Image (tube, rainbow, N blue to C red; front, side):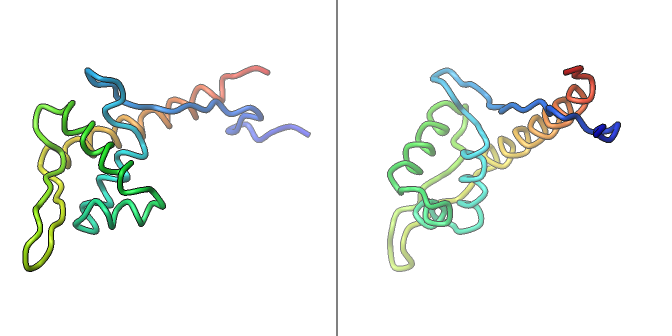
Length: 118
């Protein structure tokens, strides 16, 4: 059976991430975490929505903030309404840059998969 001309029997796969001065700065999961923080307004709610521990989410946010020129997430201290977290302009920019690179990478993988002769 022959595969359709626009598909490969062996599609090329891969992952993309952006390295920073101390290792991974942005990757798929980190970007989704930032989007969830924007959506839920807190690191703990974002972590719960991803079945991730608060500690791990906190460590990822701290890592991104430390490696960024400007913080990507700002934590708000508690009070009458409680604490929370907000995504900064730098965070929004990081999300947009990552998704642009991610989509270009997916297009590359699909295009190159068609050229594989296996």
